[in-house]
Each structure stands twice: as structure tokens, then as C-alpha cells.
Amino acid sequence: MNLLKIIGICLALSLTAYGSIDKRELDELKMGALVVKDLKSKHVLYAKDAEKRVSPASLTKVMTAILAIQSGKMGQAVTITREMTQVKPTIAGYKRGDVVLMSDLVKAAMIKSDNDAAKAIAIFIGGDEEHFVVLMNIRAKQLGMSHTHFSNPCGYDAKDHYSSPNDLLKMTEYAISSPTFNAISKLNSHTYYALNKGKIRQFTAYTHNRLLNRYAYAVGVKTGFTNKAGACLIARAKKDGKDCLIVMMNCKVDRWKTAKVIFEQVLNG
Image (tube, rainbow, N blue to C red; front, side):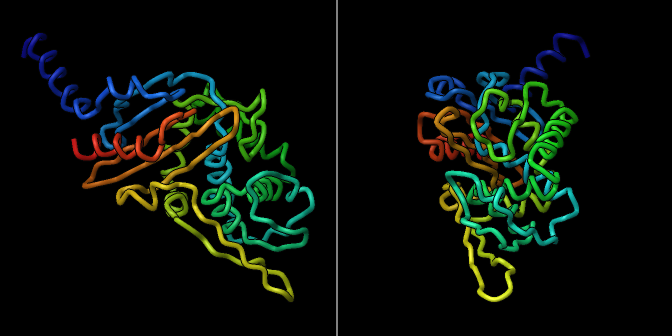
């Protein structure tokens, strides 16, 4: 087979793999950064400012959650301390002395993005928040997240808390290799209880991810928002053996409708 014929075949395959994405339409979106990846072919179908430094907001909690899942402590009970409750704005509303299972804290952090749950995870696993952040950055380095530095487990805006869309994609691909993570990230809600002696305290975490309620093929992953980061989303959808992952940063258009349009192009292309 001559070189020209090989090049022709490669071009044809490329058009087949990428032809379903309307790149011109995506280029015009008012969005800080966007990456779309076909997880089956391992091809990045679209990228806009993929290496740009961004504030990851609560997308940070993907790292917090996967470290908790891999800690071997998911079945352990965590006694809430005063320090764990000193967070804002999204909270479960734990009180000092509440006893909550680690698995419930992870679900609360992922589903509703509760910052007191994320901080409790960090302090319990790391011994203190600072050491947990060290663990976050070690794992980021191991994953090749070369444009990332974490300074907190919740996703608060800070000068030394940043990532890039490509790095967030790497982090998520690593996280979704865990069946436990996948099962949690696609939950619409989770009701759980503090294991206190005496009065029972009930908590319910409801998802912020509207795709899980409105798009049949959505299977996670995480939402985020801060004033600096804007509206952010890591979304995944699967259909008929196809598997697509999207990272959206500082989205100034409807992120749910936009993600659905992208998924439809990829999954039905």
C-alpha cells in the first residue's frame, strides 16, 4: 500500500470520527473553555482553550471524592468537628458531634456539592485539611495534571487553586475507572442519617446536575459554580456502546442544553 493511499484512509477515518461534531457552532459558543472526548475511540473531538488556566470550582470535588473512595475508609463513621462545619455557601448543615458515614459524605459532596461534607472528608482522611491537599496534588502530579494546583478540597476560588480543561479531563477519566465513583456520580438524590445516639437527624442531597433529570443517556459527573469560575460542568453520556465526556468552563450559555446538543451529535453520529 503506497503512502498516498494510507494518508487517504487516515483522512477518511478522521472524517468519520470527527464529522458528527459541528465545530463551527461550538466555536461560536460563549464559553471560556470546552473539551469533548470520545472515550471509546480515545479521540478528542473538540477542544477550545484546553490548556487555559481556569478556576475549577466544585469540579475539584471529583478529586476529593476519588481519594476518599480509594482510602479504604468508605464504611467508617466520621464525627463532625467544629472545623468541618466552618464552610459556605452550599452545606448539608451538619452540627458538631454528628456522626456520618464516609460513604454518605462522599455522596453529599458529589451530588449536592456540600462543602461541609468535602471538608469533613479531607480532615478525616488527611488528619487535617492541609495534608489532604498535599495528597490531592500528589495524585494530580501522578495523573500528569501539569497545569493544576489544588489549595482546598471544596473548590473555593484562590490564587493557588487552578487547573486546565485538559487536566480536569485526565482527572475525570481516572475517577470514572472506579465503579463506586460512577454509581455515585449519576445519583439524582441521596437520603441518609447521622448515626447519633438519641435523636435521628436526616439529610437529603439533591443533584444540581439537570442532565440527570432530563437526558436519558447522562451518567454523571459533576457541576460547579463560583463567581470567578462561572458555570462549569463535567458531563458524561453513554448510548449503544458510545461514551462521551465533556468539560465546560465559564459557560455563559445554557450548559444543560449545550451538553445535550453535543451528546446528541456524538452519540448519534
